[in-house]
Length: 149
Image 1 (cartoon, one colour):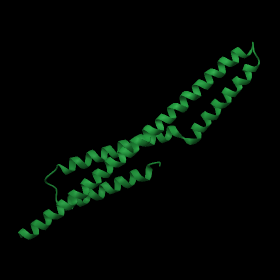
Image 2 (tube, rainbow, N blue to C red):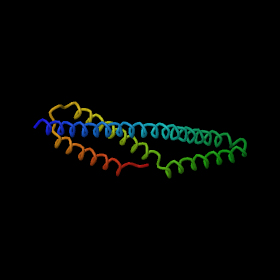
Image 3 (cartoon, helix red, strand yellow):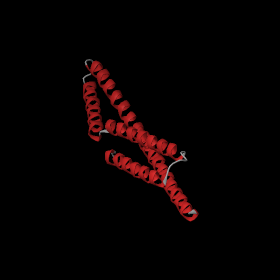
Image 4 (cartoon, rainbow, N blue to C red):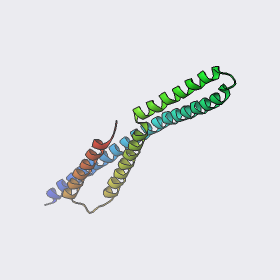
């Protein structure tokens, strides 16, 4: 009987280790998406600032261009560059990617907190752990299916 109990405890410990590994994976994925979010956010902010600056310059040059016609050409150039930047930003879909990265970060962080709370429970059986591991794997699959790389 004690041998069976030791093997059961060993099974539980192995499953707890699997949960710890899944927790580590969640934290790593969350950190990965946080880095990607920060990098993309920085680029998106730079494009927004450049677009706004070009549009402001176009307006200023248009108003000044009535006195000096070559400034109208510069105004059209600034407006055209602003349009190209805006279209590139829409084509790259950076706002949607930022939103999806943020959702992935939240989902991985929430799953990591959930795993930690389960690991602190002492009354779970091997079967309970197995069911929970399957549940976590299903949630990870759902996150993987919904994310944008």
